[in-house]
Amino acid sequence: MTSTLEPSTTTATAPGNKLRGRVAFVTGGTRGIGAAISRSLAAQGATVAAGYGRNTEQAAQFLDVLNGEAGEGAGMSVHQGDVSDPAECRRTIDEVIERHGRLDILINNAGITIDRTVPKMTDDDWNTVISVNLSGAFYLAQAAMKHMLPRGTGRIVNVSSVIGETGNIGQANYAASKAGLFGLTKTLAREAAFHLARAGKLNDGGIGLTINTVTPGFVATEMVDAIPDKVLDQIKESIPVKRLAHPDEIARVVHFLAADASSYITGQVWGVNGGLDM
Image (cartoon, rainbow, N blue to C red):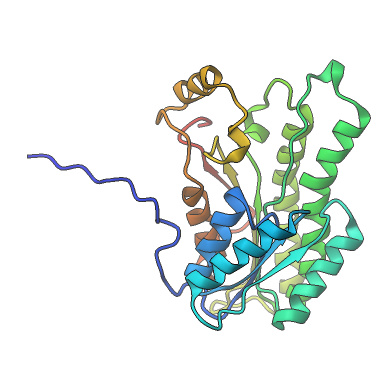
């Protein structure tokens, strides 16, 4: 006799207490993968500050949902900012700390695509994507670490992409930005450990300051809506598990890495891609 398990659509939002008392800032945190991450962290007890770019109305609606799921007095917040601007990155980090009193977790999720083959790619196409996807992650991590290092604790998780590992036609800018997160993550992780060791803040019982990267494969969000069905079928066929990821499946790995108990994981790249890149 055999049985099958029905797929869950609430994996990431199952309640828990792994992040009770923590404050998390999720860039691009009101839509797509970012929204799933925000909800996942909140479900684990974190107070979530979700960043967004331009759509204030949509961000306000998401905040209502987030507070509704977390319960009365949850105190979640949304913060508008341009992650490609270093001054804006520093301002939003300061704003979150001023609002919530601390920052324990930074999720660098905000990202964009401007797809063209290399001969047709403009300077602006290249620079805009690098500025948002890679430089923004650096500026935000730099500002967050200035707060986290003196305390000796923190979690930074960068959201990269399987395209950073495999490359893709028409996405030289995107692939380069996402691959750049690997080197950035490993360097930040080494520097965090170096500074904490020099300050005498590393010990067997501490949760430390860790930096890791998650690399989603193709995820069922609005970003794939524009892909023609025929092309999407080809993509699914190329994935060993023959389907797209659910946003919650990415969020679950993020909240695992953000937990205190994940203190021995740092400088790592976690693929969540259905076996697309092995």
